[in-house]
Image (cartoon, rainbow over all chains, first blue to last red; front, side, top):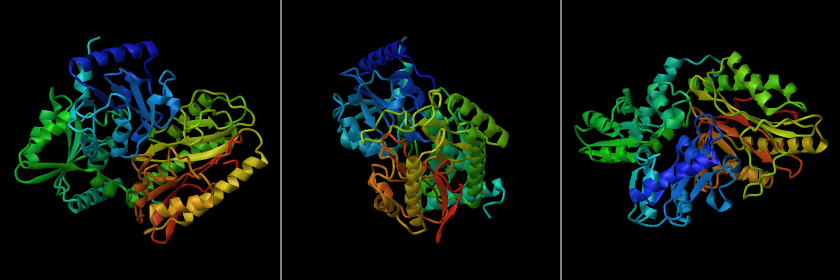
Length: 145
Length: 368
């Protein structure tokens, strides 16, 4: 899967952060491979299936930073620092625990997400008290530029 | 039995029976499935590679009623797929109390479903896991056919992995060969990673494997870890083996012998009724660090090339699975030797009441 180069990716990220500000969205969680490639530049290895081998990414409003959750540094652009790379999580609660270590992720936040299971939904509500979930696809579709 | 050609109609029928049984066991009346392979399992509608990354789009789904009848529901042409799907669910499930199982969905779809009267939205993951984790005889035939195509294709490339040949050329030849042999699709970007040339390490101090192919040219003395997978009849293969480029060394042959010992020890623990943790403990007793910690010791295989059960991940609760006859396991221990390249291979088995049956070829030599 082609990935956006650094300059193009920075432009996509700026557009997403602007949309997040307009919508009062504190955190965007993306797990669809094409969206992770667009905003984090991280590509998946496998051609098909096998979700664990597709990296996910988190975009945080207050810092403007992108974090990648994946199992392999080889698929992640070098400009994403080591502190912003998180190991693959095999369960929803451990994923949310990892997200909670990211500066700017806090209770009561509005989280835009591209898709989820009920287990992830429960883990987000339990670990981020008062979290409000909205659709990341609508947020991205509303981006200008 | 497993050597016979798959009977696709019987496979569909038996998958439907398994699904119905697991829906009843988990007290789920209706399923609404969006994950591509779950849709294919329930409806028989083949999921194209293009669909795979869109598995969470929630606009082409399967709906399954408790009597086993399955629909393919395409809401992608509607301006508001969530509302359209909500109306379908209300028509099918909204006549009385209904526990509706969902796998992956968008936030708007979840909110819509929760607003449908008398419908309780529950997680379908346990239903789908329990249905898919044990393979029918025809599913197993498809897996074995995929594996044979994969093995034949890799066999023809062994002599090509010589100094001066690039990963790109190996990939081109592999993809051409699997088409000639009858594969429906390629599933994994073929991995020909030189472990003597890979400098990146994980936080566990092990090599960052697998990495996407970068077109590197093979060099004399490379130890390459090969990983490939193809599809046949909707099912996957998985072939992992280690090749020395040029003459093998005594150290490499020793790594292989240790890998063979660990693998035989793990396979010796496989039988219906064993716990996943039995395999993990057997590997740990055989040697230190017997697999790549950022991955796992063993994984299930079926429609996905890696699916439950996953054994030896950093989540120990996943090891508490009890093996059942008919499960398919890929066992992939690793002997890592810093500076030497080590050995990694994968062997696929079907769990039986008294042990296992090989679905892949047994790896008998250090040259793969």
